[in-house]
Length: 121
Image (cartoon, rainbow, N blue to C red; front, top):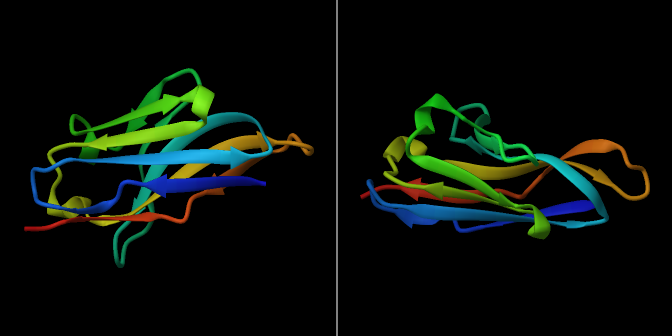
C-alpha cells in the first residue's frame, strides 16, 4: 500500500502564509503526479495545484501568483507554500499522488486524510 501523511494546516489571518507538506510512504515503485486538492463546506473537491515528476506545475486560477507547489522526489514529498491567504481559501486540503506500488506495478491514485486550513481574523 501507499500512505500519504499531510501536515502544516492551521488557523491564519488573512494575508498570512502557511506551508503544507505531504509525505508518501509504503511499497512505492514510482510516483507520477503529486498534488493538492481542497474541499470547502458544501462545495465539491477541487484541484489547487499539481506537479509532474519532471517538475511541471499546474495551478487553479484562483491561487495563481499566491501558491507555489514543489516536490522532493528523493523524499516522495510534495509541498504547498500558500501566501496572501484569503478567507475563501478556507477548506480541508487533501494530498493526492498517482503511484505505482510493488508488487502489482499498477498505477493508482492515493489520498491523504486531509488537513484543515482556516483563514480568519
